[in-house]
Length: 123
Length: 107
Image (cartoon, rainbow over all chains, first blue to last red; front, side, top):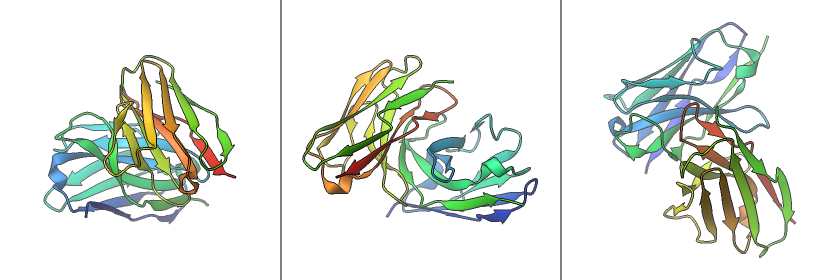
C-alpha cells in the first residue's frame, strides 16, 4: 500500500545538525511533490518545506529557510531533510507527506502522511 | 502570509449531533482550502479537498463548503470515532498555512 516512513529523529543539542529521511513505497515516488510538515508538542500543524516531483523546485517556511535543506533521490524513492543550526523551537514531530497532484511543481493538497519522527532539541 | 482562523477551538458534542467548524482566511483563496482530521497520536488524514470535493473512503457524513474567505466543514450525525482535531489548510499561496485546529470531544 502507499506508505511514507520517516526516520532519523532523536535528541540533539541546540546548534547541532540532524538529517531526517523519508522512505516511500507503494507508488511512483518520482511523480509526486513531497512536503515536510511538523507539529510541536500539543500544538498544531506547521509547514516546513516542499520539494517538487523532479527536485528542481524547493520551498521553505521563513522559520527554517537558510538552516534546513530538502532533497530527494528518486532512484531510491527517498526524501531527506537536512536540519542545521537547530533551535529549541524546532522540537516537533516531523511528518513527510505527499502532494495529491501528479507532477506538481507547486503545492496543492496532502493526500498521504507518514507516521512522523520526533526531533527534540535540548541542552 | 494568509492566516486561517478556525472556530471554535474546542467543542464538546453528543453522538448524532450535527457539527459545523468554520475556517476564515485573511484574504481570498478561491477554493484552495482542504480539511484534515487528526486523531490522538495519529498522523493527519485528508477529509475534503478544494473546499467541497469528497475523498474516497471518507464517510459521507463529512462535507465541506465555501469559497473566497469563508469555509465550513460539516459533520452530519456525529459518531464516537469522530473525536479528533480538525485542521484547515490553504494552498493558494506561500507560505502554506494551516488553521490552529478545532478539537472535538464526544460526550
